[in-house]
Length: 139
Image 1 (tube, one colour):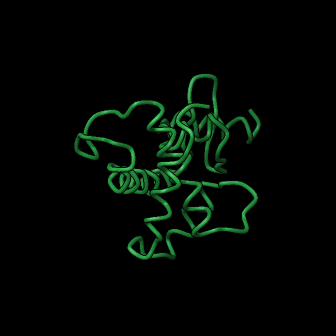
Image 2 (image 1 turned 90 degrees about the vertical axis):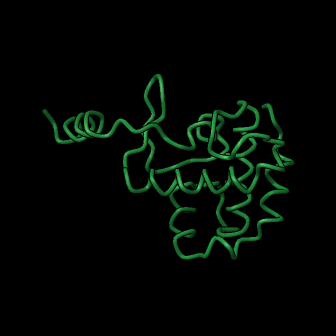
């Protein structure tokens, strides 16, 4: 067995974590070097990065509750698909504008690196929330 096949096999068997920003990646409004796509789902190849994405997603969801019109607690229950697209695509787009304005595309793994160097309280939340609220809800 080749080392590339072994690596793919090992990654698939060891790390079956679904990508937190799968909807954004599937809609092609973002890319991520750490994602692995198969026929059914988008997986994350790095558990620590996935944890950082989960934290970021939770923070975006909490901050965007009002902008998305969510009545429930920020981390309870699923959101509607169109709200999730607005949250993911709009949130990542706003973060790219704030943290990586020269980037050609929204790159989740690159945003995580930039975010690690930034205090989340220092982010321009008003602009980010406006981007989320104004993101088209359906492609």
